[in-house]
Amino acid sequence: MFLSYASEDRAAAERIAVALRTAGIEVWFDRSELRGGAAWDQMIRKQIKACALFIPVISNHMHERREGYFRLEWKLAVDRSNLISATQAFLIPVVIDDTREDDEEVPGKIREVHWTRLEGGQVPAAFIAQVRRLLECGSRRARPSDIWPSRVDHSAERRQLTVLFADLSGPATRPTQIDPEDLREVIAAYHRCVANIAGRYDGHVAQFFGRRIVVYFGYPRAHEDDPERAIRVGLESIAQVAALDVGTARPRLQMRVAVATGLVVVGDPMESGSASNGGIVGEAPDLAARLLDSAEPGTVTSPRARVGSLASFSSPLTRSLNG
Image (tube, rainbow, N blue to C red; front, side):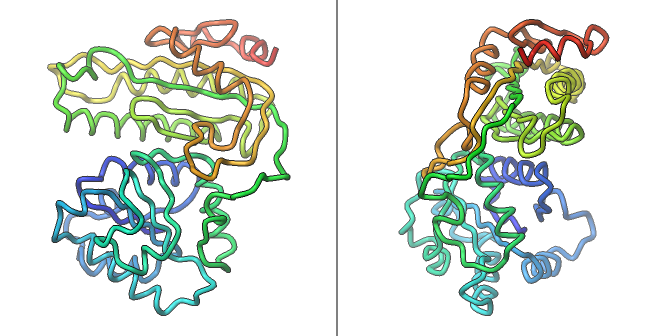
């Protein structure tokens, strides 16, 4: 997939890229792919010509940027779409703010395709699942139902799910302690760090909410030790995020984590894309969110225990989370 965006939308685009990559979807994201000495224009053109899906990230920043390389990227993608069968998905527009779908700053061919709203670059599980399906099928044009099903998904299933909520806290992220531009970079590094750790334990990053991250264990793949995996991800994330370089003049970053396990129903994502649980309904996500509010920095909190380090963690503790 090729992700195209205005430089002002880099943070939101990076959230989208990290979420897709964590789900195992290959994404061309120019900030991370290009290296010094690369033939930039030639490389971009080559990637747009070869990509399976093209995601233009749309926002009101278009009106501020009358000129921008992203506009050329969109033109190249539209030109390629004219050579592709109308039955095959290629253009997958994503809008990250309140931009209207009839905005004339957007090329007409892109306006014709259904837009998916990912506020601020927050990516629900349902969007990732549908993108994966489009990549696997490659046989239909992107319609509203391809991204956000309009009817109840009667294949929804009940399953045990462990939910991890993480929050970046502490004085290092207060506006009085850090410039907004620097804060954006810190949060992006925090997102990458947690997403990479979650991926090693087969955790599924469901959404980014600025300083908050939601990770599922047990969906889409289940493991007998999902609660243990969640706690280990929480503890490793706390340690590695604290080690991130935020400048010697500022205190270390702090994280607090909450984990809850319970029976949920998976399926039927809301058509608007506004459902915070991305099609997962049950007590576990709500409980994890409530626990996070009372969690202490540097710890992983569960309904029955609080853990502050890997040394104090044991498997019997996580088995109690299933109760």
